[in-house]
Length: 102
Image (cartoon, rainbow, N blue to C red; front, side):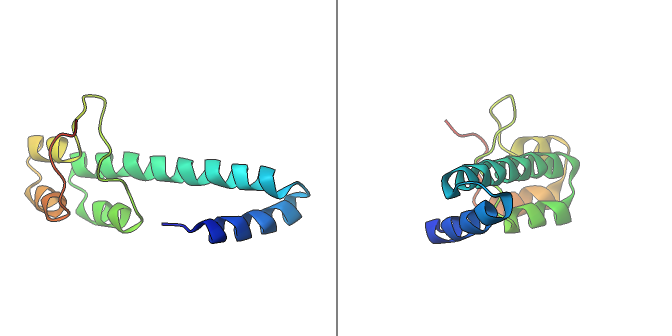
């Protein structure tokens, strides 16, 4: 993941560009990163449900959280198997994804 030194460096650049404090820029950066990770999780769940294997692989490579769950508490494995996306199920299982957390 992203190191604290990297976040501090980027926050310093953002602060200079925005004309604000490093603290504020750091907080803004963390919100942006958290939003990015949330969107990756949504992409992971949608790609799995639709059997979009290449998009699934890209989201995994970008750091999507395999522990992401849908509103029913199931991981990406559940809709992938429900819709018969065999290759997607294999990819998720190869990544070590259990069906349900909790």
